[in-house]
Amino acid sequence: MKNSFVLAQPSRDEDDEPITLGPFGFFRLMRRLFAYTHPHAMKRNQLIALVIIRSVQLPMLAWALGAVINGPIARGDLHGTLRAALWFAALAAFTQACFYFRVRLALELGEAVIFDLRNELFAHLQTMTARFYDKVKPGRIISRMTSDVEAIRAGVQDVVFVSVVQAGQMLISGLLMLWYNWALFLVVLAIAPVIWAINRYFRSRLAYTQRQAQESFSRVISTVAESVEGIRVTQGFSRQDVNASMFRELAGDHARFVMGAARTSAVFLPLLELNSQFFIAMLLLMGGYRVLNPAIADPIGDIVQFFFLAALFFDPVRIIGAQYTTALTAMVGAERVFTLLDQKPDWQDPADAIPLPDISGRVEFRDVSFGYEPNLTVLRNINFTAEPGRTIALVGHTGSGKTSITALIAKAYLPTAGALLIDGRDIRSIRSESLRRRLGIVQQQNFLFEGDVLQNIRFGRPGAGDDEVLEAVRKLDFLDMIEALPDGFRTPVGEGGSGLSVGQRQLICFARALLADPRILILDEATSSIDAITEARIQHSLAALLRGRTSFVIAHRLSTVREADTILVLRRGEIVERGSHRELLALGGVYKELHNRFIAEG
Image 1 (spheres, helix red, strand yellow):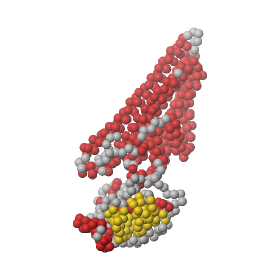
Image 2 (cartoon, one colour):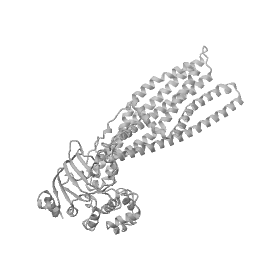
Image 3 (tube, one colour):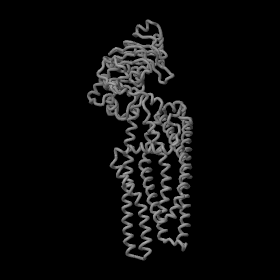
Image 4 (cartoon, rainbow, N blue to C red):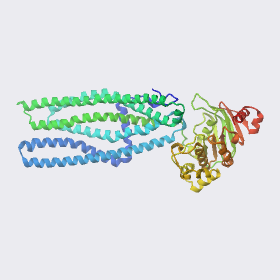
């Protein structure tokens, strides 16, 4: 695989490996997709009825046209021909009306199925744990929600019902041809093994190229998403040309696979049509022979009628062949979407998990060990207790395990060994949703949603009134900063918080956490994005925020750490020192070394 975004080589996801959609896999996916039509049974059943009617109509039009030629026209009956023409026109108008409603219902049913599928996919993504998002790139998820789902839409709206209409048209035309002239129909049947052989040869090649094309598109989308997110890094290191070159390689891969699929289809479809025309020529020879041979002397009208039906028999071969490529794209998209839907979180709350009642906020680690990967332990034998209302500071060098401890408290991950207790209850036995409603988290890089400032603060407690939001900002003593914005609380916030400074975003996140009124509060480098003057201004507000809550503070500045009830010093995933600020300074160990470095760095 080619290079991806700036600083990293792209890795293949588990679903990158191409698979061959054999007939059993194809129909298994079709059956699963069809299940999404059950909530829309009335619309689906109406559509099926129209499909059946439509499959009969076109052969009947051909039969009626042949009957008029073989009947009143052959007899020279002018009035009979006029009546037959009017009846034929009425049948044609009814046929077009059925076609209109067939197309309309197919589009409506397809949209309903895609609506349900997208909602199910999004809801499923909300249940996945942090480990899933550590491994899967956002662009891969976006491609499932966009290109793969749109491919399924085409399959639901077009392929299934068009193919059924065409197959029904072939069946009815074949039965009528058999009734008219069984000898000529045997010539038509001779095409079947040829079409089967062509279809079998091209099916696996088309499935492979379509799968590769969709996977390469997924990598393109992933790279675009990653590049947009990291544009400042790219520009900061003048990597625009290098990134553009890498992207060209990925886009070239995608173009090559798409062209490969197009070349295969370009051979497949003409072959089907060529065989149809070849057999029409054979029918001309045999039909002409049967008309001109005095020993047989078939009526020419019957032969004309047979050829009208033969055209309707062979046209579906070409149309179904064209739909086959769309069907493969849809089935590959369905396989990728269902693979994601079938992927279970690496852990789930047990069935008997209990909702967390009002808690005091006591947090206890008992011999807790943890690793993001089975062979990579980042925390070893962590033991401590945070009593309700106390503040625990976590300090240590980068990679020492500070954020991992807070991630376990937030139940983003589960310990690989030991027990983590909240008010004496093992965190595994607590419903994650109820725990997180009692947590407040402010991180170094907080995310703001598109909307306005008021909506982003209210995200901490959606039911809060405007007065409660205002009071939370007042308590943190930065109301004047909000009012100084162009539209105050109604100032628009772009995606990810664009339009606001980093410090303003962080203050909004503080207000969001305070409004949620959590029993357990996590501040992960929460003041690192705020300048020293602003931090000094809100120190007493932070004290109010921490008061009465069990708080875990990770900070590279000493102002908050110094006031913590207990400081845990971590090194390589282990607690090497613990105590108050004064006790640890007196100890003269790792904490004093960090303290002296903080002072030296200002």
